[in-house]
Image 1 (cartoon, protein in one colour):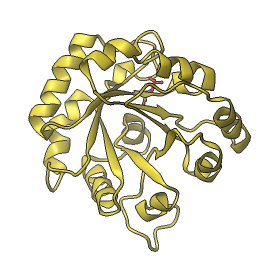
Image 2 (image 1 turned 60 degrees about the horizontal axis):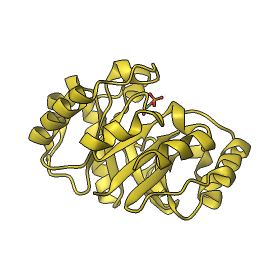
Image 3 (image 1 turned 120 degrees about the horizontal axis):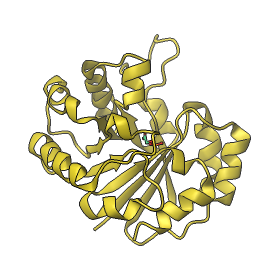
Image 4 (image 1 turned 45 degrees about the horizontal axis):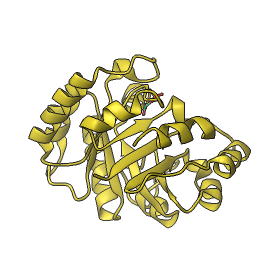
Length: 221
Ligand code: PGA
């Protein structure tokens, strides 16, 4: 079964560091596995130029507004022009530090769908129902849901696999048979056990170093 591995660089790296990463990332990507790198907006051009062909470009967020007079916003059409494919929305860091609401996230998903981009909806368990209620429709083309328990993010305390299995089931009951990925302190030691019960992983800290992320990718089979 095909698996999705997304590197979320968060607010890290300069153009030079991003180029170095791309030039040194040389993982043997297992057959049927899709690898995506999601850099900051300001690094999209740099990464687009230097990323190996076998890796797709992603983004960490998108504006809920279309193109227009919205100072500081990066819209879905602009992401599409960079050949972005997968776009994270509703990450807990966006909800916590930038006060994003379920309603904002619903609008972002609409923008992505309109522009043929794939939404990766990040959710902790407590948001499953309220986020689903905020969406105009639960039937979202291409939707991927990332289960991201708050306590597991950046903490080294990755969630127990049986918890991931239980919540993935709940997500499927709410959103239908969508691909579900897990994020929260995934590394090369834990990746395989999560891939036994999910369709992929979202990797933060362990994706920042190209050699370490290559180990995560190669340990996924
Ligand atoms: P982490 O981040 O791997 O550093 O826990 C995951 C995420 O927040 O997407």
